[in-house]
Figure 1 (cartoon, one colour):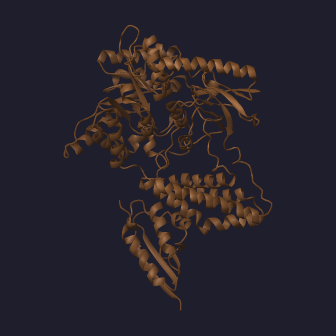
Figure 2 (cartoon, rainbow over the protein chains, first blue to last red):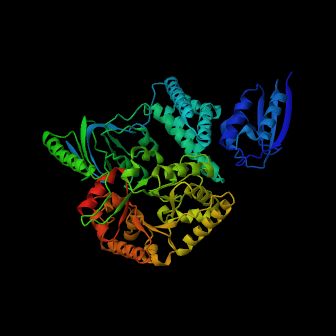
Figure 3 (tube, chains in turn blue, brown):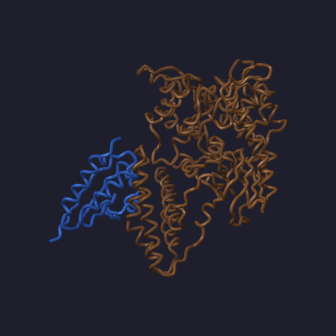
Length: 94
Length: 523
């Protein structure tokens, strides 16, 4: 059975999705089996959340609302983990 | 035997094997098959990955670690590997396929609107070149100790990573005031720039004379004999100079001359005894801002400044606010695509357009001033209002910090390097003046010091000496210190002229301390 899940969260990190947050995000995404994508708009374009090129390339600024969607066995857990990561400001010490 | 000439960027003599750097990177590697090409690029990526992981173990600051993690993640990203492998599969040479993928990405970042993302283009370029270096065996090319290195250009990080011993450096490009030249003078590594390396054939050894500006490849017996004699003279001169190192510099008539040092990186201080100096006449702060994901914060700057001030143990330390722009671009801060960066938004012009960056630096400096004798100097001042604005920001910083009890106002001085400022120096409310002879000369003569063909024009002449005398006389009249911190002070041939202009404070490259003190004695 394949699950789908979606979620969204506002990014409060100072420069937005810059190098360290992007690396953390892709590293976490890669720990899940599911296909995971994100977008700064509900209409897309959707990009692969496991690709640093795509994640950094989105040049998402601070304050943007990040939308995640996942398809696969662990879709629910994946979206939840990613939303939590962003909520916790990527667990980076300021 | 082949004799080449160039412009001395750091004096000295070196005799050793030649080592050609970066000759390979531009060549195209065509593997026997697509399989071999793919194997080669995978191997290069693996070794780049290992090198980055190794570097990550040794970086202390978060920002640098972030950049390395970003580069490592890129190497593992299919968005990069897939099109590279596809290019190789379609018959492209491995280096070309890799370069195409990376260059497209670099261009995307260069044209980003946000300056932070623009700055990342440099990290991508660095990664591109690191993999290319491994592909061509360049990364394994450790610079052998004692070699005379020939290269088109050299990055400051590469210079610092090498152990130079008795070796030297010869560059096709680069100028005498560039960062590598400053580091070479500081470390006493002989260096020539503007040497046409196109005719260099592989050979065993070379003689580098960075006093007269020559490089002799595959020297014959007579050249070797001549060189040996010149070297003996210089060794003897250095021995005599060294006897002056620990003593105060006094002119033949007994008058005291302050001899301070210029510092571009704090690491340079480890080789210098503070007791041999009268302090630090110029700390360049650009090093703090280079190769960074984000600008250094107040705490980091404060710690670095404090360490430098404590090293000097009560002797004066003049720290220059960020002098970015010109030949010192800083990704994410300086402007890209300026038609003439030396006449563009650089030095204080940039600082006043980014007051939030200057303010952080001023606060860090005010805090560090509590630990020693710190003075603040502003570069590229052209009109009195620029200095007045800096003073206002400094006053604000002091007032903000007063609440925490760190409230002394350090002296605020200016670099005199724009001819307009030099001509009207009395109009500026500076606590001290420091003549930046490199830029003052090139602006005065409208001759770039990076242009080897104009070296004669860009050297001091009557107009320059007249300006110097007037600045010094003004300082004397109002009893404010005038010093000179440009390269001129490190050149012993000019020391007598500088003293004749009335200067009594010189700030020099650490490697020139002994020679300059000795030259003062003879004057």
